[in-house]
Image (cartoon, rainbow, N blue to C red; front, side):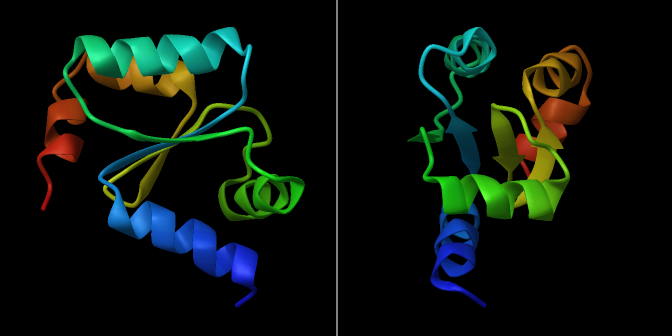
Length: 97
C-alpha cells in the first residue's frame, strides 16, 4: 500500500464522516451545509493533492467532488447525501458503531 493510500484509509477509518472537497465547488458547499444543518460533525479534506484524487477515483469510481464517506462507507457525492437525508438511511449510517 502506498503512503497516499495509507493516509486516505487512515483518514476514512479515524473519522465518522469525511468529505473530500474542492474549494469554490457549489456541491461541496451544499454537502457541508446540509451536514451542518443536521448537526453532523465531519472532517473536511479540501483540495486533496492529485495523488489522493487519483486514489479516490480508483477506490470509488467517482471522479468528481465532494467524495463522502460515512463510517468508512463511500456514499457518493452531494446528490447521494441529499437523497439519504430524505430517508431513514442517513441516521442508520450515522449511528453505526
